[in-house]
View 1 (cartoon, rainbow, N blue to C red):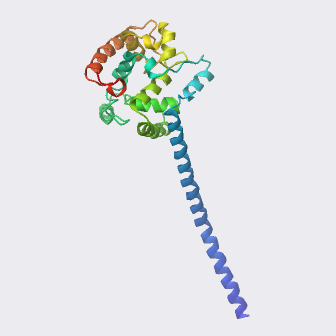
View 2 (cartoon, rainbow, N blue to C red; view 1 turned 120 degrees about the vertical axis):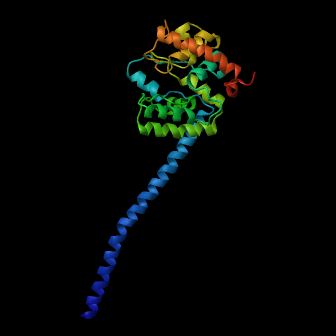
View 3 (tube, rainbow, N blue to C red; view 1 turned 90 degrees about the vertical axis):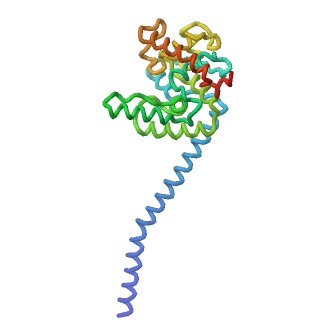
Length: 253
């Protein structure tokens, strides 16, 4: 009888220990699945950015959104050689004068924006051309920390795997210029009736002037604000050329 009781007690102890181990096993399994999922996601993102290093992004999420909204999406990707150097200088002058110097994130601009925020001024954007390229090519337009986090990851990947020249090429072919028009070639044809390779300095400055809000600001014809902003950008373009701020794209002059 005592032996039977001892055996029953032993079985009870074993069963209790087994029950205690089950949550631990489930936890370990969950961590293993999470780690493998993260590795698979990272590999997928790496392959995705690697593909876009040589292949033009065929269609972006922003284009899909505009199409759902009813816009007639127009786009005609072209190599950087078929885009006027004036437009290269214009977007660098307007959006990111330190494009050739930073590694995807302009810490100086971020610190300045945060300082202005602490002073009670509206929080202004500090996104670089690299960040905007990551957003345009892989993500969607809009705020939110999840998108910002993903943008930071893709920005790091393209800065590691792409040349600055390739980053700007994808940027100019994916940027939105309003009314469902995407890319420099389609924008040039829609706004000026000419190829992107034929843009002069003033036209390039006008295109760059509306980039922050292409569906709100017009350039055909430009209002007073856009005209003034374009004039400022055109003046800065001369500085970009003089100081070699586009040398990583256009080469040294």
